[in-house]
Length: 81
Image 1 (cartoon, rainbow, N blue to C red):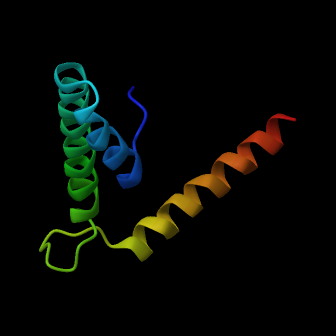
Image 2: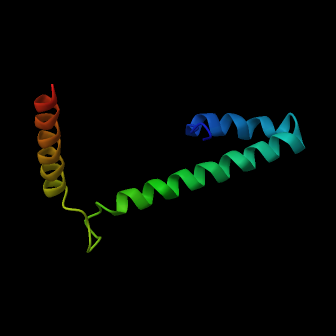
């Protein structure tokens, strides 16, 4: 998986386009496409919890459910010891 770049790193890549026009431009395009994909994925993940989403995840319920499952697993591990 490609390393996620910060905005400053993307700006540095963009600034270097003028040093090596063709190669740096292709690298910049690749980096920007990767960043757009990353941000789109993050938006999709966050939409699950967004207040405007009518089917949003109930975070409190989900947290408690996972905590209960974890407690059961930890008990089972202890029983096997």
